[in-house]
Each structure stands twice: as C-alpha cells, then as structure tokens.
Length: 122
Image (cartoon, rainbow, N blue to C red; front, side):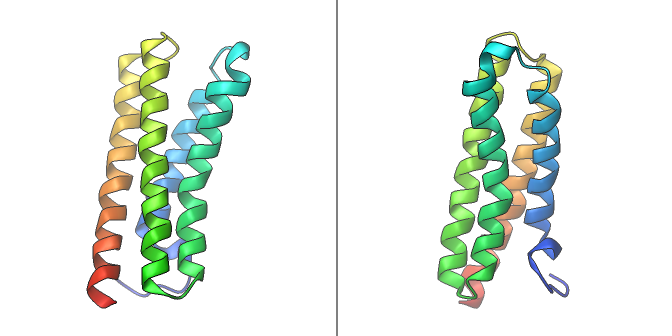
C-alpha cells in the first residue's frame, strides 16, 4: 500500500476527492429551485465521503476505521442516486452521468480495497 503518513495519502480519500470535484461542477449547473434539495444533498454527500475516511483514519482503531469507511461508501451510493435523479430530471446529460458513475464506481472499488486491507490487518 506504500507509506501512509496521513489520511491524504490514502488512495480512497484521493478518489473521493475527485468525486467531490465532479460534484462541484455538476451542482453549479443545476437550476436555482434545486438549491435546497439536490444541490444541498449532493454537496453534503460528496463531502461526507472524504470526511468519514479522514475521521476513521484518525480513530487509530481498525474496526472503527472500517465503520467510517462504510459510511463513506454509503454516501458514494447516495451521491450516485442523486446523479441518476439529475439525469432523470434532465439536468445532466447521459455523458455527465457516465462520468460521475465512473468516478463513483472507482472510488467505491478503492474504498472496498482499503476496507479489505483493514480487515486483514485487524
């Protein structure tokens, strides 16, 4: 896995950070009437992904860390659902949905790998 000095070195945190970037770009283009629903939820879900990885890492206990990573994984799935809703409502194109899906799927895979690693060493 390489030398990990802080949560920023974790590939799963980095992958989730990329998802945040995709989300920021998308929510800027959503209609104003979605400000308190989709925009707010998508921002919170995206930010939750990195925050929970960071918090779990800071617990210094593998089982707690795994639980926070599971919460992050849940937020990624919630975010994917929001992107699907955006597509269904005509706010984003099929191509934009595909880009978001690829980023989220990658983040989930990397996160699952980290969870597996934590399970093996605990």
